[in-house]
Amino acid sequence: MAELKLKSYRFRAEREDDWLRLERLLAKVEKRSVKALTDDELLAAPVLYRQALSSLSVARATSLDLSLVEYLESLSSRAYFFIYGVRSSLWTRIGRFFAFDWPAAARALGRETLVGAALLLLGLAVGFWMTSTDPDWFNAFVPSGLAGDRGPSASTEALRATLHGGGDKALSAFATFLFTHNAGIAILAFALGFAFCLPTALLLLYNGCTVGAFLALFVSRGLGVEAFAWLMIHGVTELGATVLAGAAGMRIGWTLAFPGDKTRVEAVAEAGRTAAVLMGGVLVMLFCAGLLEGIGRQLIESTPIRYAVAAGTAILWPAYLYLPRAGRSDARG
Image (tube, rainbow, N blue to C red):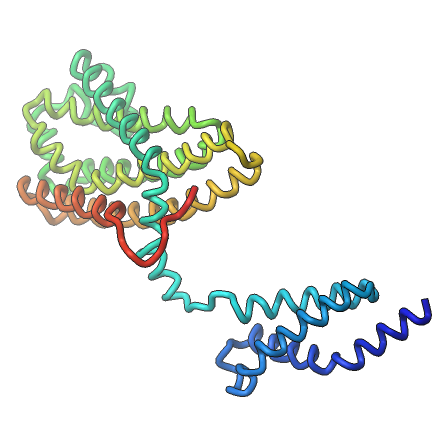
């Protein structure tokens, strides 16, 4: 035992100066930034890192004391992330998110996105058909406190006024509801994905029914063209965000139920990383939808222009998210 301690002491005495020098370099970088190092220190860092790895290898092979091995492991790990880790500014990371990470996550969840879109459209068709068949269904899909006097009993002129009156308080309340409602649905669709996809699917169906009931009411009064333009100027972005959030939730729920060759924890963790990136993009889309809703409701009164804006968003979002691009590989889920 005494011989082992002596060997450990000699080993440390011969190499400790290099370890401490490396530790000082790492402390400067961690407290400030890599710019705090001089040119000589930058050149010395890789050499000191390799020496620390060599010392760690010797310490493990010769069974030196455990505390020394743990110290060298910690030092080598810190040095590894300094030498080989990705160091980028906040703006660089934000740029990479928009340029590569978000579109890659959307493409990785393409199958779930198609399922979510199908569920939303199915709900829209069901809500439209049921409300067209029996107007009383409107109140089942749209809460009476929110609908106010825009229900089946409202006159055609009153409904038309809500579509072309920028300062109308009732329209403002309903437009605010559409945004907050869909934002809430989007967040819930993602959060409840852990329950094996079923709550997410039901939320997407219900959201579609709400939109379908709204359109059915206006179509029944000959206002379908105007109502669809008013809705889609922000609805393309807003409903698209809801579908993507649902896709993120469904990926987690499906992976939880069917993890494949990996352990359930590993599979869900991997799916969660991709879904989390996609949800970051969903928040951006909801913000854009809020801006479009405000501009479309208050400033754009022309139905053709509203359709033009809606068509533009319907082209731009898929092109941005799904057209392939060079530079980075797609996210994996």
